[in-house]
Length: 350
Image 1 (cartoon, rainbow, N blue to C red):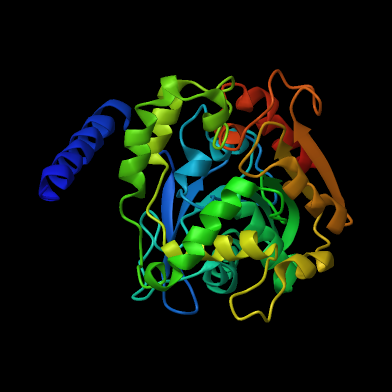
Image 2: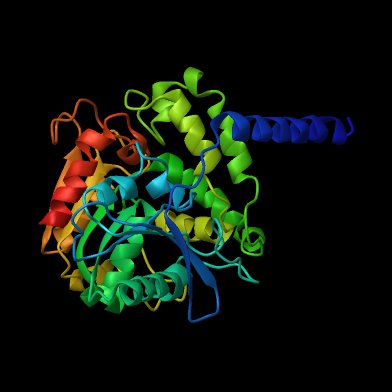
């Protein structure tokens, strides 16, 4: 059979679904201002500001997204935006797009997690502090965004942070057989993946996959969210506006950490897990009781390593929430505004 007979219908399907989803589920940008910070290796990083309402807090907040998404992960809309919630309570909020995401520059060559740590986050932190004339800032990171806090604070920037919140951010990678299997495959493809700057099909495949959310078995959906906490329409909107193109090198980084149960820089010179021990920033470590992508057993160790920290488990057995929280519903859950966001604000108010 001619491969075109298979590929052409698939491409048509992707285009049709993409256009349809943008029309049905598209959501405009909600930030008040767009800023651009330049990294020390010459990459422009987009940062989206939500100005505070009412009495303004002294400390600005930097909000950082996860692995396969952009800044809309943190400021999606007035109902599901952590940034909007905090701005309503007086916080000056800044949501970053890491390199290659959203309206940030795409470097000429592929990049890795180390580039976020060494270039993007220091540039974003420095820019926000300069623009606000603040001496330090607060930090809220979801998934990989929280891991970046641990890595950046542990390698020399701890004195720039006043308080921090991490949401579903693993620091250990053991006891996940399915992810280990995928990671072995990823490492086998590493020579090819490492040459690609961005995986362009991720947003399209996410939208196609979201068509079938109503028939997903709860266990399968649990890799990303708890169906008890989310609406199908919300997740389809998120797949349309939040999911972003990513550099496959980042996936290779995670595959290496999962297979080898370590968390180090590519050159092996920096052990991010060990560097965390120097973090003195008061940190709220949040895990979802139903999160199978980044389960509590791989998130909680951060609270044991960072001396001034508190561990929060979102679920009936932890904080007594109505349902156990999965990975995405810490932000996009129907009750997140009532059950999760106030706990973030409460910690920052500390």
